[in-house]
Image 1 (cartoon, rainbow, N blue to C red):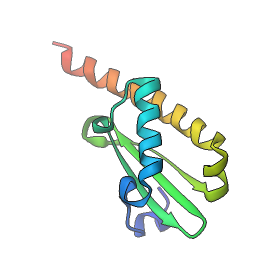
Image 2: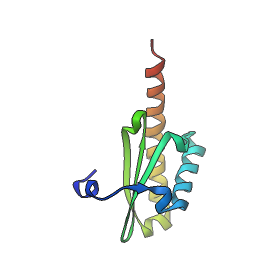
Image 3: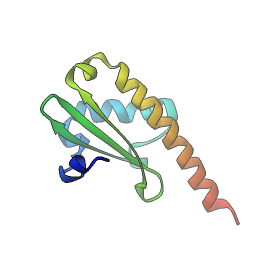
Image 4: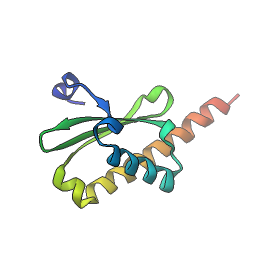
Length: 104
C-alpha cells in the first residue's frame, strides 16, 4: 500500500459500491468457495474509479489491492483477472491456515 493510500480513509466496499461488492463476493464464492466472511472488502472512492482492497487469511493479514477506473469496471476484464488472482491467493491462504491449526 502506498503512502498516499495509507493517508486516505478506507471504507467498506459495500458502502461505496454495493453492486461491485456483490459481484466480487458472489464470484469468489462461486469459483473458489471463498465466502464474504472469509475476507474484508474495503475501498477508496477516487475521482475516476475505485481502489479496491481485499484482506483475507488469519487476522486478515494478507491483502490484494488494485485500482479500477470507471472504464475498466464497465469492461470487466481487469476485474475478473483481479478476482481470479485474489481468489487463488485467498484459497491457498485458507488451506494453509487450516493445516497450521490441524497440525499437532
